Image 1 (spheres, rainbow, N blue to C red):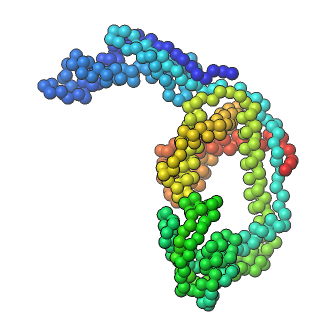
Image 2 (image 1 turned 180 degrees about the vertical axis):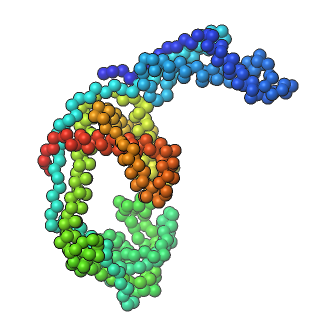
Image 3 (image 1 turned 90 degrees about the horizontal axis):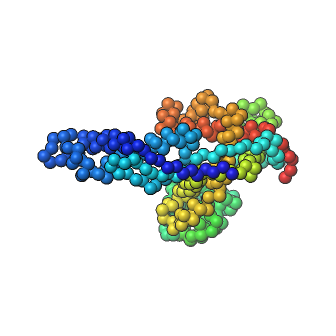
Length: 418
């Protein structure tokens, strides 16, 4: 297996060190202000004595990267990460000597990547699937009609003002919340306490959330609420007929809507099935290719995964800083996943190079336009922001990866199966 760790030794000629030292002295000379001397007129000898460490650092900052990267270029070494500089020997009148260790990008020998076997078959859409989607559309078009004041009962949609009195951090307060009394998506504790309540009445009660509740800040907690019933509404669904189809969109009749729903369901499920197959293809490619991966790549990917985890927690209203987590252990737990993701990315990039797959300007432009529309900002502003954040490169990289996975899927051997 090719070695990706490299060690080099350097000896930079004394005359080059002397010239760099003179430039460092002159640079500091222009900046420094000392009593008794005009700006820029402090003698070089005084500068060398008083700013010895600063001069040394200037010389190293100039010469070490220059000679290191020039030699790496000459020897065809693609350095990744930050080189480790050690055993630095810098003395007046002597050559500058140092050693460095670094990692280089791995050379990947591609194996066979066309014709890989993967389980896949196009989805089948049954009449029940179509009927279920039509009911979802029908539900979206439902009207909620207010009923005359009476006690709330199962099946009602209760409009309430809700606030927490204790047990919730931060507190819960909603002026208008609609709950389906007795509905599957309504916690039984709410239904039990709203049932029998009439508009204008309020009630205080304790409610214990399930341990697996979707909002971690409330999961397993007992919260005391005050609820005031504002109104009761009845859900009225439209008739499933040609008029309904015409109201939904540009359809002549219900049968035309059914066919459109069938096509839409097929496209959705086909996309999901193909994405799963592409993921399996990438996993197989990783298993088929054995090569070393630089630690710098793995560490960077681990950081990205941890950041994604943070964003997920924040989206749930959890501040990661308040959690007592062993972040070293968290990072270690992500290492294997990071390693495989990096290997997959390197392999896919290599395949893209061989097959001439890349993102066109038009494809990047379309994605920028989509993002601008989503963020509700002018396209030019979105492009400037993305360019500043290195977003255009990431967009092009994602498009190239998608094309490569589609290429692999197209050339894969599909095997039907559950």
